[in-house]
Length: 313
Image (cartoon, rainbow, N blue to C red; front, side, top):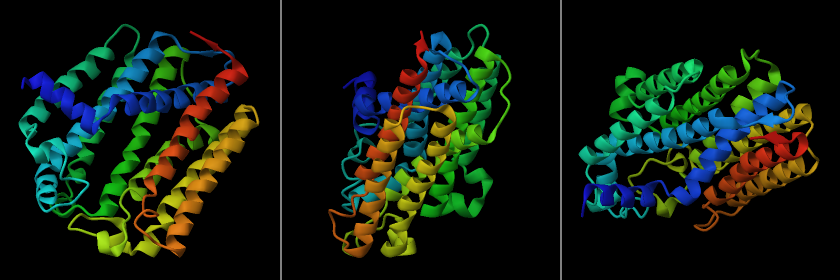
């Protein structure tokens, strides 16, 4: 098996393009078009900078996935060999790819990111990317906090999700290069905070189990208890929805988006409450409800903004 083949198999297993490329595209465009709508631009503009922004966001997400697997390789292998169902089929655990090969892949991805953002007229984009990559690198070393680096807790992983703000910073840089300086306002801040809450909801939802399914893997249900842990994704979903409701009110999108967003949030929050009231293995799978909410939040916002204001390619 060639190295490229192993890379392709790794990406298909750990970063499925059919799911994460559209997710990354919607993540960037919801921010970039949202910034335009909140600053009164109509029709909205895409153009080549938006294409670079989409590619950068997707590759950055891949780089974070790679860094995750490189940093946690030893732990993942131990958990997989111990029979944890969420780890035993991972490529690193099965020996289909090595941490060294992941480092090479990460270096190639990093090179592609820098190359994409060194085109003419992208000064702010390049600076934001370099800053963001630097902060991400520090984050994976727990900002040099030795105790966390040696024994990271689920809550420490949750803290790392705050790095999602860097995607918002990058989207602001793309706006700056395309339209000029951006003055921060309350709705803009809420637009940038919404993805942090959404990602935090996903992070907590996927690490909740009933007591009999707990393994050596660190989960929020193990650390906080399943009753308390179930409230975390509900709280983050509610926060993200509240942020986006304010954004849509200011941007004046069509009525169907806040209705769809509210329904998706209610379903996700309801699933958390149901698990807390009557826990079971199937009800512990809160991730699916949070992922549907995230898709409605991002994809729906892109559609709502473009239909309300129009778009120029």
